[in-house]
Amino acid sequence: MVEKRTDKTKLWWQRRHAQRLTNWRQQFKDTIELDAYADPGEPIMSVDDNVLSICNAAHNIRLVYLLPLVIGFWVVSISFIYDFGPSSAQVSYANYRVEKKLELEKKGKPFDEQEYFYFEALVGTDGKGSKLKYINAAIKYGTDRHRKSVYGDIIFISILVFIALLHTLALLRFPRLADIYFDRQRGIVYTWRFGKIAACRFENLGFREDKIGLTLFLYGENKKHNGGYWPALFGLQPTGKAHMNNEADNTFLMAQLFAFMDKGKNSVITGNRFYRPPPRTYLYQDKKPNDFESRLAAILEREHELPELYAKHTF
Image 1: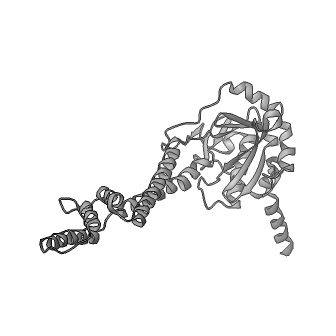
Image 2: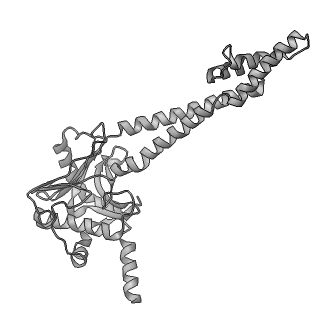
Image 3: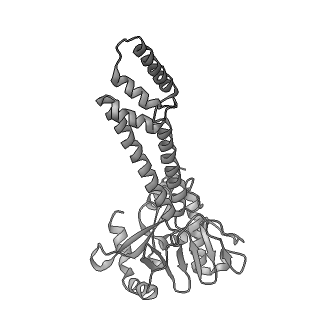
């Protein structure tokens, strides 16, 4: 029992370091027996005679992480905006002080004019307070300390609203990233991201198991590195969910990839073709780059360098 547990721990550790996916072909064949399904399950988006596509993990990250962040910033911003300004108790007290001043004035008794002007500006002629009246009263008649406090509140709320707007804009403009395509006919894997293409032959595809699922290593266009190419990392979530992806889920998805690339669509789906409609929560689509085929060919001429790079470097 101890020996088996040690072997399992060794395999677990190995699969969390970047290496060739094809090194595990026999391991998956020995540990799992696949059936074909009408729906092969997420994250597979389409299957036909030649190509199987899988959605990028960024789709879930956008909804699971960015959307709650946007909602959170707006909730906090609205909360501070709502609390900013005079409370009902302050408005009542201001009206009382204005009336008190009139009584003192009739009796010829002294009163604090600065205080009176402040309270009068706070409630106005209608006796009601507002955020604009509060700002005006503080700027014109408030003490230096009070004025600085109001300025500080305005700046803080403005920053919160600005951040909320930025995150909202990022959410709306975040495009649906391209799927990752496994081309059985040509024996390659390819995709693109923000105008840059990444690809490799299936035999050189690297992988690593992470907390969110799987990370695939392709050879991508990259101007920051000599030669213009460098390993490009793409996340996959085997259950199509941002959480609760375990080793068994990873194994099942990778076994499906091997089955498709080795045997074809009939080992993965029961129908002639499978297509999963993409989510409709995007306003933009990450467009396929220009001159795609010629740039893809240029990558495939050099992608043999990929395994040595992801094995040598830490990503």
